[in-house]
Image (cartoon, rainbow, N blue to C red):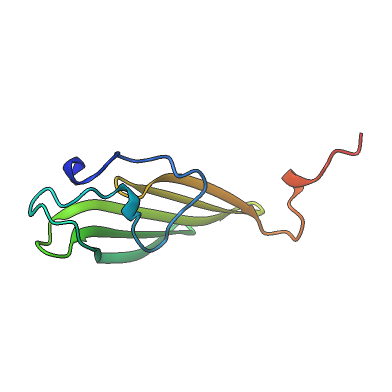
Amino acid sequence: MCNGCLHKEYPDRGNTCLENGSYLMNYLCCASCHQRDFVLISNKTTAEEDGEEIVTYDHVCKNCDHVVARHEYTFSVVDEYQEYTMLCMLCGKAEDSISVLPDDPRQSAPLF
């Protein structure tokens, strides 16, 4: 992975977890060929381990195939919540949790 291609390593993305795509706002240019063009996705794999879906792929320079960053996205269901995580030098780090119930118990107002 290459920190010379990026504005910032692992920017905090809050709860924005990308299963696919690239965060181009964080992309300076390719440190190898010095071109600022599209970043392609290659070597994409999807695996399931212990009920957790794991998607990994490489962000590569369109012009010279330089590997800019490695992207990892995970999805799982824990108790009554869907859990998402993302970790990537280019796209950043993020976590999100969403209730599978119609009304999220964490969002309900206290009665007293």
